[in-house]
Figure 1 (cartoon, rainbow, N blue to C red):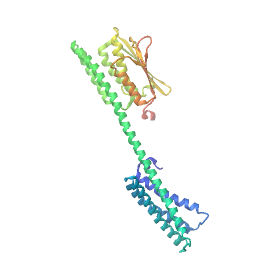
Figure 2 (cartoon, rainbow, N blue to C red; figure 1 turned 120 degrees about the horizontal axis):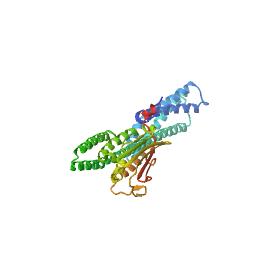
Figure 3 (spheres, rainbow, N blue to C red; figure 1 turned 90 degrees about the vertical axis):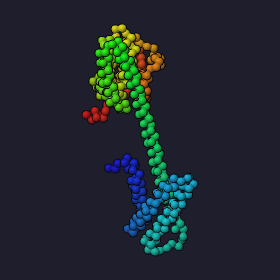
Figure 4 (cartoon, one colour; figure 1 turned 90 degrees about the horizontal axis):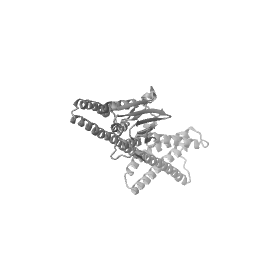
Length: 361
């Protein structure tokens, strides 16, 4: 079975395949066109010799055209026209020799225009060969330019995603280190030590995950649990987290640490503001071909404008929307709304995807 992708990627192999196939096709069409004229074996020999001559004579054109393609427009046009005419004239001479010496056994026509007609036909064939050569070459150049543009776009896209992911680390570190600093100031060294230990585990987990690749939801939950252990050192029983994760969603792919900024936001603006603490609900369920993720709190709430929280200097939540847009284009939804009876709810809808390895299992 022919691997067409490898054939088109290898220019040398593609040229010889098309070059040989084209001249074989010429011989077949020429024979079919003259089938009613002559079916003798010697006529097949003449056609084969003509096709072989055309195959050999047009090979130098490839290297001439390759050089001409690097020249200015007028020089290229002159080179192409002159070389095509020279090859066509030489091929016409060889075809005349094959026809009059082999097929007609030395007979010569009285009318000179029969030679001229053969030259015109040869020139038409060489011009067609040249047109196909430049057409395929230009198509390959356009494809290469598209591939280079796509590669550059992909690299820029990946760099943007990495920037968005790593932008969360300073934001998270600032909040956590500030809490550790406070614990040290009040000489609660035991609690500070516990936070440093859990922070180390969380950062190790975070750095091990490629920001470009999506991860199963179960791994995202593990990361959130590590993060929540850090926060529970600060809030103890004041922080209550309830998980409602559908079994069939555990293997669904999600962007790494996509929920952590939402939970961090809920802790900072809801749980920390409540004297007796509060609750955070994390929900994951499938709906058709989509994965639905929700994070809600029962805090005092906040003002929402144009679907966004009205808070200055926020990094986490706008960052999430940018990441989702980069990964899923328009095939996602990100909604911030008021929770009932109180608090804020962030809802995310993304395509339900699983890894190929899970599909094979």
